[in-house]
Length: 236
Image (cartoon, rainbow, N blue to C red; front, top):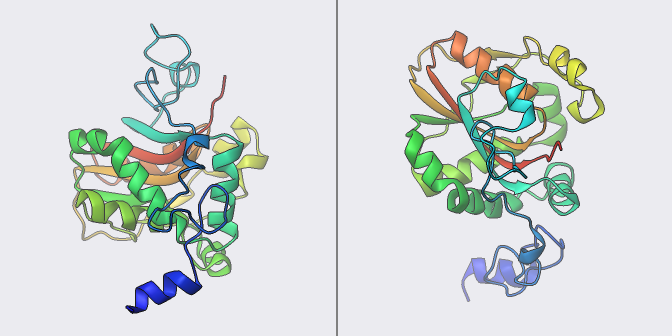
């Protein structure tokens, strides 16, 4: 019996939805759990990818009233209680293996979008060094690395550096979010010349984090900035 088979027998992969051993074992998510995940489908905002309830609309109310720094983005799942618990376990419960499922779903759902924008590189949203030390890994980087293998686009993990140890965004209002992320990022490498990038993160709510990262990249010469996220909040 091969080593990976033994590992799977004694340490079976966990389902990112129910968090028990995956069944059937050759899956990344239980067949019974997959229908619980809510995928973002059309119609969605042309700018941020947020679901729209008016089939005749092109943009969500948040994007109509906000001058975002990025060009456009897309999300895989709607941020509801199911994916919220999944991401929480991924980030704070050391469920790093969930990244493989997330990356595969992102490649399947957003592959055509990624191919269309033709990015030179994937840029994960970085963690501040103190938070990275405490957690032990950057969840956006894990997803980015998995996605990179599937879409064959390189990851540059040190292009962006989180210079400011910001407060947790979910506890802040919209204005406070913007102030919290002001000058939060800086460029970590000057030897990389990129025209088009796609930023990867786990959650998109108001877009403050993405705007701050995109602003930093644009000020340093990146012309076309897109994003791909695992989940997006319904702000209606």
